[in-house]
Length: 180
Image (cartoon, rainbow, N blue to C red; front, side, top):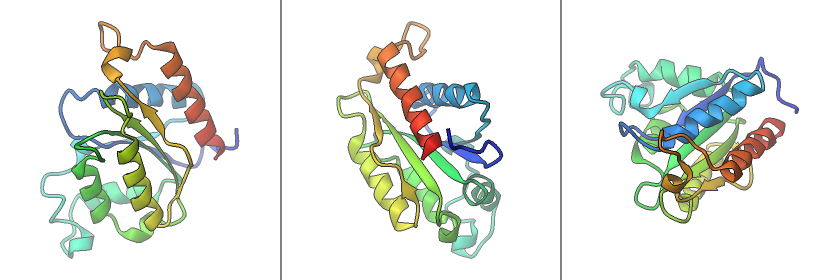
């Protein structure tokens, strides 16, 4: 493992919907990182301040989102995204957040993307869309996003990720990202 734990890693949940299923995968990824003694910085889109879209440095009106941008993007060496499929792509709130972050904050970061869907494609299209945006901003995106399909069938009665093949795939993806 090439990862240096002193380099901040941000784990980003790309949805704001209450009770979303993507948070189950997000929580499992957090557990996988913590098992490797890595304490990621956790950013969930539901934590964004109200009015963030119009009150930020990029719009010329600084606001609380600017501190989140610094902490979770500028200060991070790596970004690991967990994104659900919204209408065949990434959630608009994640794209809106990216749009209010100063572009230079993204330059030369490394990122990986885990797509989550209740359907059969694991949000591969949304992963590709996010990868395109990140690469445009100068982020090196790890090839091969991890698609998690049919999420509801992978959960137990307590809404925990119980499917062992998926758990192993997530663990292997995290390991690969740490070495990336």
